[in-house]
Length: 183
Image 1 (cartoon, rainbow, N blue to C red):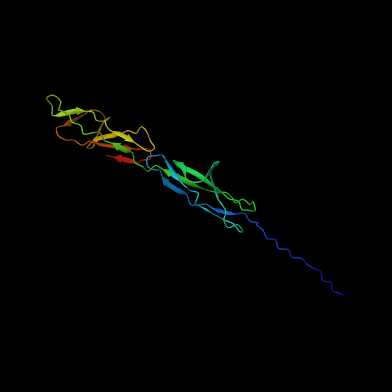
Image 2 (cartoon, rainbow, N blue to C red; image 1 turned 180 degrees about the vertical axis):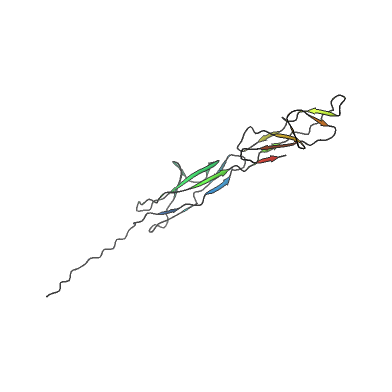
């Protein structure tokens, strides 16, 4: 019985069968920039992408439909940034995301008025004076903050009978983030 040998072709396929793999960075927390209610950050260098064939893939970073190309003005609170990548074979990575949280950690700025001088009221050893509208406060986020004026532990709400001599009035303001400024 004769033996018949047949030829067998072995074909090796070389190609890209796997999509790239994205790795998101850890969540980012950042305070507001000085004097404003945003944080200007460049997050386009965070995270990574790997692929079984391509060695240098680009990551596309987006907030909604806005593509990030550098620094972005992140508002107060939490913003989600998505990451996408495709390899040269047209395979898309599974989208990943991370959050950027911007917090207000800047204290309000109090501006004290000039020192006040008053003569005592007639036949008294005190001068009745309302100093509660003399100072000012500004904040990077909140507007319309109230100032609390105190003499010692006494909160002033209008005219106060200042005794002869020098009396120190303190001013305090707290913004909605709980940042307290005392002067």
